[in-house]
Length: 283
Image (cartoon, rainbow, N blue to C red; front, top):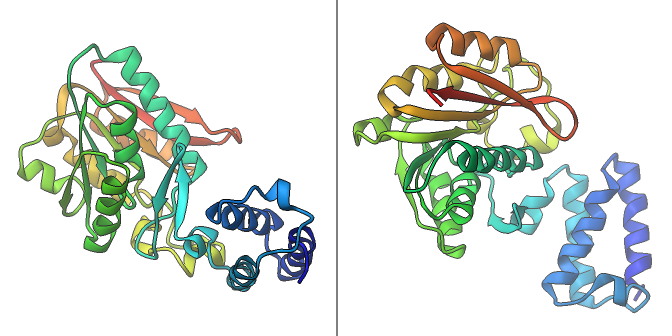
């Protein structure tokens, strides 16, 4: 049996030949060793355990079929917490961590003490809603999704992470409007990929299309949520969206057409791309 180092080295060659990012193989090995309570960097030159070798080889085969690493592991890390994922939910991304970071800063800056009513529209795995509740316990957090399967994953994550979030099934914000919920903060990471856009296989072949594609210009779900906003938002409130890097002007136009008196801010992600939109009503 080879060592951990040699096993990983061999896998990197296989990934390179298959056009797979070698960092995925490195992270797969790291996650598997941690699952077995081993420090990879301390056992690097030791003979690899049979069970880890087998799991790693199967994982590499699945990576070479362009399956997302999170699906192979069954989870993804988000804001320091482990979230279960499946084919029914979008895998949480680093950019979305940045979105929640800006929201937490806005809460500190714009809202005083006391309870805040918040919602994550199209919650998927529940990563945004659960993280918001965990980081700001004073928030009363709702989360909606049109997929019962997605809500099943989100509820499991809330239970595993001891987070009290109110989940509702329905299309965008409609179930909250039906319940006459009024929000201080509305968060959404809706599908924003254009129907005609080419998407890498690991995304289009394995992640739910309902969470990916947003119409001819990628903004169908934004328009729907903005149309619902007058029935949903408090007089003094804010909305926060993740968006595609090339949608700034189009999304600005959609917001200004409906809410000419609102304040709109766009923020760049760590790669310098415009990826977040914030709409402020009277604050």
